[in-house]
Length: 511
Image (cartoon, rainbow, N blue to C red; front, side, top):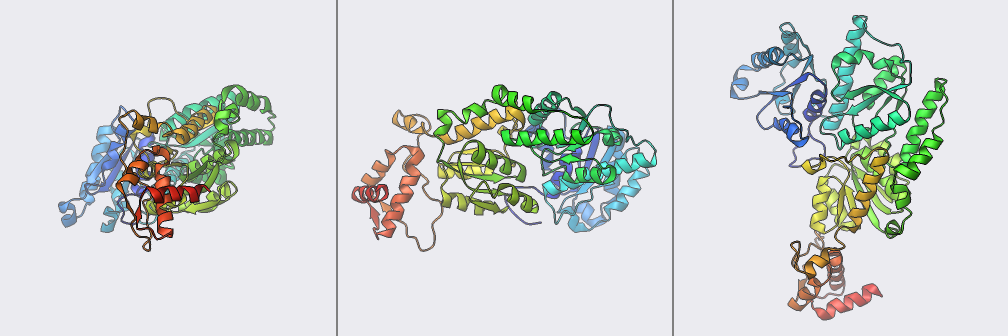
């Protein structure tokens, strides 16, 4: 746990609430002070018609004086009667955890008066973040209901007649998850693979008893679902695939892995013709990467930052499929750093592992890429530096929960990503026309050239004529010209930049 005004991954209780609100007919009780209850805005972000199934049991001055046992138990039993859920999950926040109350005892007491199953989220709120908590909570719920089914002799372990899969990790507030799910359904239908369950996406906890009937499990995002897949492999010897089908190369690896699992079960299928057809006729990114438009991107530089799944996937696409030089690729999923480093180190100059957004901002300013692919934080950084940014990962704003269909996985996902990459590099190339013709998007000569100055650098003054000359330079390169000129002036001990210094700098740098 740490105090911060902005974080890439939220606190642990957000992860638990994302899992609870993704299941069908599951209600969450959040033991928290006012201010920690902002998760209820989920329905607004996801354009959801239903209310968020979360109740805040507020920690107030009365709770601090008398304890919260009575209040928490009353909230659980009240919601049990009002909502009639299959499961109620109780979670504290890192703030309320300071009280060190025996919430497990509260759960036992409430279970005596409730029809629903009640569990306490088994998460250390001081040590894990949102993503780790969501992974653990999903595993905990699956384990709880599999054990319950085993005791009731209702566990279904007979494999389905036809090859089938459990998709694990489609959650609320996931980055384009619902669009990805549509594409995954289409992909498995094309491969003649039946879908057994999709977890936790609108699935009833009472259906979890039939999870072992699937032939294999698929975890599309490493951030949530790996622990559950490992549990099912350990208990029922179910293989799982954790290759994310983002990009043409990864889709091919993903399909061949399915082909291998089927072969291990004496089902021989050859998907080569399917892969060739999709690459040739469905995915437009294959030919586009060889087109003259895309060839113009050769030699361009980019940096990538996001969650482990999406940052690794985009890094590979930039390097392998679009011949773009990736200066560095990074993730804020420090707990998955070993996998990320192995997945990306061949495709970029440097691997970055940090959850410090200020460090990332400084690094972007220092490396000056032609484009950024990151989260909304990197988009803000890019806007200040006049560097275009394509958003490829959470955390995001409401515009990254689009009503239109924009998947990242599958063959339609390759088209969306190709558009995103191409538009990110070309965005701003026409902005100078707006300036020439007095468009609405013009900026003055206060262009943000370099946000970071070392302590030994001195502020360089610009003459009025030099500022006017700088303002005539197209905006998409103005920042770089400004920074290079200032560096030249400092290196040559010029305290003021006039037209003569500008032209001298241009000659030296160009020559």
